[in-house]
Length: 410
Length: 202
Image (cartoon, rainbow over all chains, first blue to last red; front, side):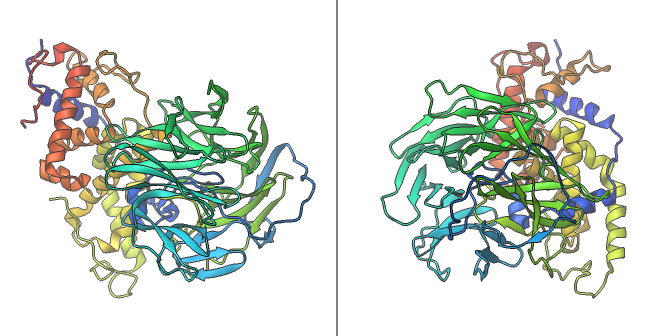
């Protein structure tokens, strides 16, 4: 029997473990490189989080994900573009420049919204913003605490409710907006029609502390919302589906990343390994068994295409730099379709922060290469284009562009 | 005290206003601080993260944020505290990302050592075993344990780092020690089964 008090044993164990370490692995260059990539305001960064969300937009690192906005001008029907297979090299420095992104973006440094070719000056820096009725619905981030706010067409607040939230989730066609809000007693999942044409579907969860935060992730059907709940005792997540009348657990998903209302599929992390990498799976949330359709330990599955046919795979290990890889997989089988090979300068790490689908055949990605942030369009036909975004005058230590409905902080 | 003072760009290190310090001077100051403090802060990062890759990531991120805030931190004595605060918060939030969550024994009473267990040459392995069990704690509890028993901060100082109340620090420490008692072999606990769990007597 060891008669030393446990507290003293812990003290000694920690000192023995630490004092054998004499490491200084970082250089100032390493630190400056990381500093340039810190992409959000400090308040957001310190809250550093990751929520879960999304239907189409997927930020990584310090931001979260949610569905992206799409152009109000619907493209004329056209035959599906051919889909290439294999490896496509992506070098934003040499990619042809193209304008006209069909996904709205926010410049958090300037406080502007870039949408449908127009630039709107915002009175506040919104973490996410999407059209609602004749105005907007947005989340405001103050020192890492987000609240929901309804705005008129001139971005003036219309209500003072400002309940705490964890961010917005917007459907691919922008017809539905979902979020979770805390009413002082419990978390409530709200599913709202963007045109105000129906009553909200409100799913009241059991009473809990605000710390047991709930985050909406995506839509698994016309009436159901995928969400996650945090266990404040260990910050683990559990996954569930809410339909306005109740919720049903979706076991096996440790961290949901994406849902498809087109197919009812859910993608999320199912296992985290000791080295920090993870395994992910696609699950049919509408099937009775809810068994994984397929799984992979090569990718983190983060976003379904609007038609649910494909899913984006990031690296299996993600950190604040984002993902070093981007692979498109067949959502039904897990077969790798296109591997987008990121090419960057020798002195810089390239990381993808977010992806957002423009339509079934192309997506946008925000990435950092060297010291510069880029927005690129990646086509399933193998095309790579750089979106022309004016970043002149922007603080070079910031990465200011994010998709307008991606989430931040939770 | 670890609290830092932030100023709005008017501090003595301010270079953006062109009043006192060039970027080269600023970088030199930062480099000197990094050289002097990196080994010690790395040890804290390692205890928080539990592995070298995680420690490097935590420390690089914290140094980067310090670098960005360098001109706004007036009190040089607060630099270590700032780095610690960023590392702890980042580690807690990283934990919230499922992909960063460490696998650990699901049965807290099983006494099974995690895979990362190492045996210590100095104490018949009990130190290594305890370190392994510390790694199975939740990040907040682990942060409290590391700050209390490695950094030897007071409850008030830990509360300041974590942004929580001293009472919460006390309860987290108590729960962490109780968890360690539950997970560790009884030979590590001189009080034996059913002993009082408060324990934070240092």
